[in-house]
Length: 338
Image 1 (tube, rainbow, N blue to C red):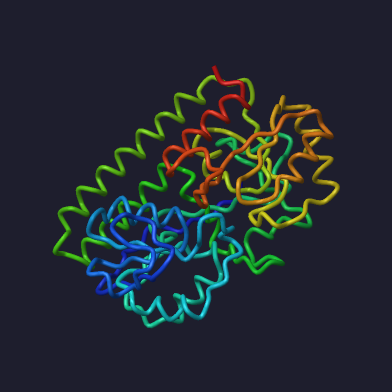
Image 2: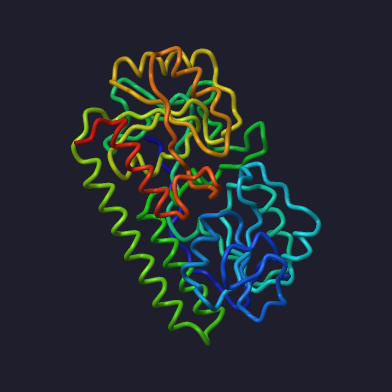
C-alpha cells in the first residue's frame, strides 16, 4: 500500500477558541452563546471531536458542535453566524481534511490556538474505489489502493470539493489512533486552561484506558473469522481494517456521495463470490440505496456499519463506545467470527 505519514506535531496553545450552538453536554445549554458560559468554551467540528472534548473536559467545558445530529459532516457549509461565533470561543477542535468549510473558517479566523486532530496522530492514504488486487491487500490486510482512473482521488480535492490531500481523515474509527488524538487534546486543554489541568489529565487517562479496552475487544472479537473482506458504501474504515488485519472494499471512495462506476460494481460482485462476503454494509447518515442494490444483485444481506460521524435516534447506541461495540457485533457476524 502506498502510505504517506504525517507525524505528531507539538500543539502550541496560548488561548483557544470554540463555538456557540449544537451543544452536546450537560455542562452547557442549547441556547448558550460561545464566550458567555463561564466555562472553557470548546467548538468541535463534528461528533468525534465533540466526544473527545466532552470526555476530557468534563464539568469544566462547554462543548458545541458545528455539525448538527443527523447532518452528514462531509457536506457541512459554515454559516455566517457560526463564523462570527467561532471568534468568541476559547478552543477550536477540528480534523483538517474532512470538512473543507470548517478548515477554511478556522484558517481565516483570528483564533490564537487551533487544535487540529490530524496533527496528533499519523494519517495514511486509503479509499480508492479500486481497492482490491490479486493478493487482496498488503501485509496488514487493507485495501490495496492500486491506481486506475480513480486512483488518485483520495489524495486530491475531489469533484465535491473534499480535500483529502493529507490522507484518510477517518482516524477515530481506529481506537489506537483515536487514543493518540485524545492524549494530544488533553495536553492542549491542560495548557490552555491550566487551572483545571489536573482534571483534564485524569479524564484523558480514563478515556485512553477505555479506548485501549475497546481495541482489545476488537482484537479478540475478530481473531477467529472465516473471511477478512467486508464491503461498505464508502471508504471510512481503512484504519479499522488495517488495525485488525481486514480488507475493506468500498463501493465509493472517501466521499460518500460519489457514485460507483459500473466496472466497480462488477468487481465487487466478483470479490463477494471469491472471498465469501456475506454482507454489504451501509450507514445511518447516507442513503442505503446503492448498498441494497448491490446486495440484491449478489444475493447478500445488508447491515449497518456506522462510521460514528454523528449520533441520532437511529444510531445503535448513545455514544461512541456503544456504537463501536455495535459495529464489532456486526463485523463478527459478517466475517463469520467465532
